[in-house]
Length: 262
Length: 83
Image (tube, rainbow over all chains, first blue to last red; front, side):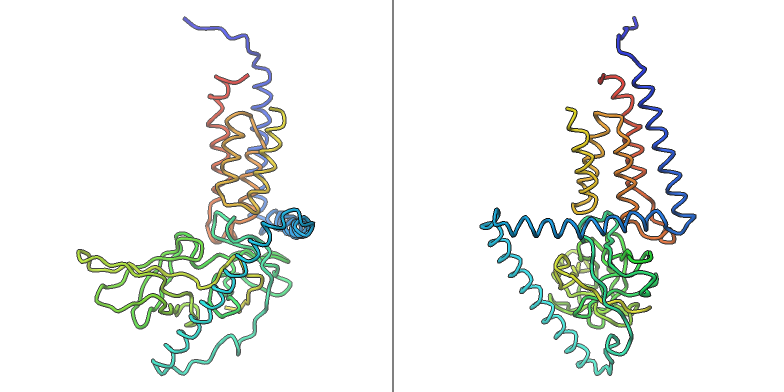
């Protein structure tokens, strides 16, 4: 037997109409964004960039009041030590890269010193994007183009320009989740699959000698380094060893990146 | 309860910018569970527009799609249990 409800459905109908309108509006805006080459994205990113800058100033202001002084001291020391470790690791990795090149008698010229590029500020968080992207404060006006290579100050490739607006661009990390890169570890070709957060994983034959700290080079990015080997795992039952690669830089501490035209 | 809806919406929008991706998703789900929230769809759309690459990269606006599915998928549940 059916039960009767005294609940009015009037509100439900009105609510559903609003939801339907919002759904169609969002679909319309996405189509508009695609048709106009990203005008909606550009507006939203410009607004968000402004808000990021404003929030950064407000956050700094709150911290400077001393309310969180003890926490700030610890956090500051922690951040400083992390930056120092990251910096030393990057320097060690750079040394390995140079040593590797010398061993193989490769007469490489450091392309970053001969190619013209631009420095751009990082204007977003690295961890917030569900698509493995981050935003930089350079766009069509600078000029930046889709496919340009994004480097750390130490010369490691961290991403590719995926979308360009007038003043901002979205960079897709080369180790963003699911993205594959063909690299060389020593002389061994390995296909790496990105796992996000500047980490990637690949497999190489177990007989090949790969050590933690070995530099990882990508030919598709002009033979530039893309990371270092973080860990190697092998099992006697498997013909392959799993190689974990990471970017030797604390991405969250990056304030500027260098962009090379592809 | 009147403050929960705007609070979740604000957390969702801010979370899309500065927090890990699970924060806006959690806000979308919580909003959709209790309300016929157009904010949930807006948060999904905002997240996609902020982070997605160019259309040439063929990336689907997953957060928008997910928010629409969640908001409409939970409608029978809301209709059954909520006033």
